[in-house]
Amino acid sequence: MSDVIKLLPDSVANQIAAGEVIQRPASVVKELVENAVDAGATEIKIIIKDAGRTLIQVVDNGTGMSATDARLAFERHATSKITRADDLFALHTMGFRGEALASICAVAQVDMRTMRHGENVGTRLIINGSKVESQQPEACAPGTNLMVRNLFYNVPARRKFLKKDSVEMSNILHEFERLALVNTQIELSLIHNDVTVHSLPRGNLKQRIVALFGKSLDSQLIPVETDTSLVRICGFVVRPEHSRKRGALQYFFVNGRNMRHPYFHKAVCQCYEGLIPADTQPTYFIDLTVEPGSIDVNIHPTKNEIKFEQEQSIRQILFAAVKETLGRFNAAPSIDFDTATDEAADIENHIPAFGSSASPSYNSTPHSTPPKAADTSYNPFRQNDFAQPPASLHNWEELYKNFTAESRLAIEELESSRLNIDNGSNDDINPDDTSTGSDATELMRVQNRYIAMADPRGLRLIDIRRAHITVLYERYMQATPATFASQRLIFPEQVTVNPDKAPLLEEILPSLESMGFDMAPLGSNIWSINGVPSVADDLNPAELITSVLADIADERTDDASSTLRSLLSLSLARATAFRPDRPLSDAEMHHLSAELMSLKLPGFTPSGQPTFILLTPSDIEKLF
Image (cartoon, rainbow, N blue to C red; front, side):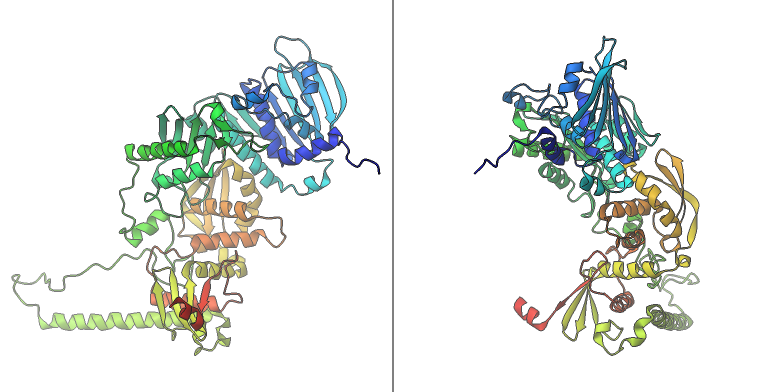
């Protein structure tokens, strides 16, 4: 029997390695920029065509390479960063594995020009799918100019599953931000399809943060700094009042390298407990400096996962540093969220009250002020403080009480008749059936988050917010363009879109306009919001656009069923749905439960979460 084990050719081995190192165009940008940083470059220019599908070009003014080094650099495990295994524990460079360039040239067409400083002639190297096609001398600028064309051209399956240009460009922008934050001493620029997206001068960390994410962060950040024998921590955290529900900027760096560390992330979030709402996240930019021998970066080819030798101790130091910073800068809010009025909470969160114009079927007054106690014994015509009010005053008060009672009864009757019109399909519902959630059913609020109602099969518990999201989603999906008529703003709002979301906004802009949004670009990723849908005129326009972009970016897939209209409707429903900041009236409970049960699929939200649960008598018996 002949031998069956064979040594794989280098081209095949490189394609296998590329599956781990080069996952998408953003991976190429990361590897090439890190090589430029290791080469001592002070200026790096990144040029992108078609979100990296057609071209990824990185130009730097680093040390450059000789002809021999240029050829050897594309061999597997060829590197100038380390020479022995012990060097892994004293790393001061971004790269060290010697796999990136070999993996890139295995799945793309590479054209590199490079020349060392002080020399007159450089070299040009052309590689096509790991095969060297030519290498010849050529005059070029000192440094390296490396072009990667037609990524995954020889791996059709990988190229086919690349996302849309907006998604891939978003990943490139996110990777660029991470690289820019750890290399503040380097001048960086990013150009996509001949449009300059970023042009960042040298500066400190705070200047780089503001240049990347907008001037609004300048006043929101507070510095964190501590120096111990184990670790040096510096960076910035955001004030609690500027925490975000979506799109929080959270970055960790160690020894000039980006990293993901859930354990340290949890430590930072614990510092904000009691200072921010439970559904928000803090923004932070924290740089750790430790002895290179105390960490292991050789965990994964992407080098984003790092192991710390003294992880528990560093976590405690980090927690103490952030906690002390929040206290030193008086970052703790002066508002008691537990006792704040519902009106203040609604205004602070820019959330419409249940039943505002964002949800026309619920007719309560938004941001209603609690009734103030009136002194009925006061009489401005009284001769002295001890005179009794005339009998006519008592009669007038009785008349006024009857008037308010009749007015309330009339409003409830109007709401009931309006419900029958809105629901349409209620004609087929038996009004005596308690499962329909009609007014005849006894309902009970549970912590203003759930509705408990009797059911022929047991006890039904409805999640108020999920139910409202489901109802609004169906309404927006079935609405005509007239429903989303644009409501012009008297004073246009401005929203700063994160660079990684800018391509997505441009793609969905026609759909946003069809749903009532009126937006115009002002430059530098700043957009003017001139109009919003009439169903959302009580919302904060900037926060609404930010929420819509975050929802679509998080939930978008290549599935044809995930249409843009569906994602927009779901995002708008989430933004305008009820929040447990304001007590729910009995009429609103009945209306919501009735409209929910009139839907074809009332049991689940559009994202698949249950809107209610049913406790049968046997389930209740088990609880006892």
